[in-house]
Image 1 (cartoon, chains in turn red, blue):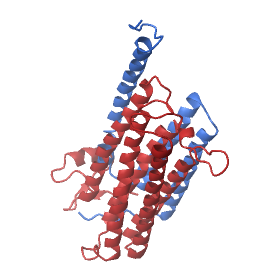
Image 2 (tube, chains in turn blue, brown):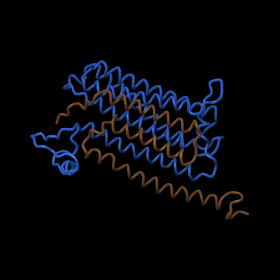
Image 3 (cartoon, one colour):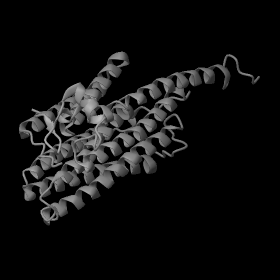
Image 4 (cartoon, one colour):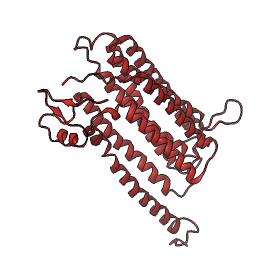
Amino acid sequence: MSEAAMTETGGVIPEGDPGVVADFSADKQTFHVPWGKAMMWIFLLSDTFIFGSFLTGYMKIRMSVTDAWPLPSEVFALSFGGDPIPLILIAIMTFVLISSSGTMAMAVNMGYRKDRNKTFWLMFATAVFGAMFVSMQAFEWTKLIVDEGVRPWYNPMGAAQFGATFFMITGFHGLHVSAGVIYLLVIAFRVKGGYYEKRGGNYEIVEIAGLYWHFVDLVWVFIFAFFYLW
Amino acid sequence: MAQEGQQHPLSIYFWIWGLLFVFSFFSYMVDYLNFQGGLRWGLILLFMFLKAGFIVAIFMHMKWERLALKVAILAPPVALLVLVWLMAIEADYTFLTRITFFGEGAPLSVHH
């Protein structure tokens, strides 16, 4: 799949292990990708450490409290007139976010094919899914705060630290999703309006936005596993 | 240096997309069917890493990037595993001391 990379002057850069050495010891640039893509990856790396620290803190707290930790499948169950279905809202939220990752991947592909219309609608769909996700999270928060009396410092269901960790982690994630929705809409409307045509017909920005969006989905994969399932 | 579009056939995205739904369903089932203990943890972690891996490799194109970028981005998070390990030790110790020294009826409580 990958042909040998070339320098500007036509020299061939080695692949594989010697390629790593060649890349890191190069005199002009290390990563042979557009600078925007490299910087987005580096930002996502830093964000990985942020969420990693939060999740590790949550782990430490949950392991060290002597009070029982509220059972997620009970806390996050919803009933539609019958027996409570455990984690149903979370399952729907996961479904929505995975769907959004799919539409985003297709948008990136359409962007490179320079199909501005499809790119716009797929990015728009991705943003809509994101907005749905945040709305459901807001509903969840409202239910916990208003109906169940969960506070960062206390909750009636178990260990007092549950609220602090839950709101901090899902809050940061929800903030990232919200920022992503805005980011996607800005880029989508720019694509639609021909902004990138005027700048050389380069649609790498769609892929760069896509990297951010997939990261948001990725963080949810970890939150879903560690907070709701564990 | 101009980067030609990273175009791969759309079909691979659909396959991985489908796989993500499948893994999510299985993850949900682990809780719904009330698996417990090592099996629960093992399956939760397995599906989590599978989903994460596919998202990074395929959706985020990492599979097709040069090794230098792969290493620069994927190697540092390994340090997080060290953090997790250290914090797990700390948490375990903290829990033990709380049980031993604090609260009513604790074995070595200084309160009488």
